[in-house]
Image (cartoon, rainbow, N blue to C red; front, side, top):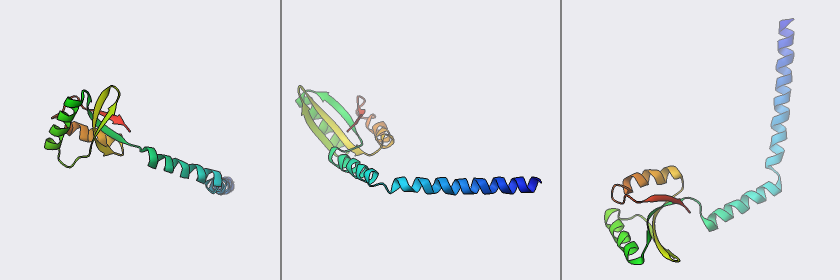
Length: 120
C-alpha cells in the first residue's frame, strides 16, 4: 500500500515537473522578450555601465594637478578629466562591478584619501 502511494506521488511530481519545465521554455522564445533584451544591450553599449573612482571635484588647476600626480603614482590607468559647470572632475579607471572598483579604491586611497566610487 505504501509503495503504491509512493509510486503515484512520484509519477505525479514527475509529470508536473515536466509540464512546468516545458511551459517555461515558451517564454524564452518570445520575440518581444528577445527584442527587449537586444534594446537593453544596445543601451548599455551607448551609455555604459560600471564604475569609476573620482579623485577630485573642484577647480581646474587643482584637477589637472591631481591628474598629473595620479599618472605618476598609477601609470597606465585610464583617467578622465571633465567639466560640468561649475566644477572639474577627475575620474579614473573603468570597472564593471562595484567590487572591482572598491578593490582599486583601497589601493588608490593610500595616495588619494578623498577618492570615492561613482557609477557611470
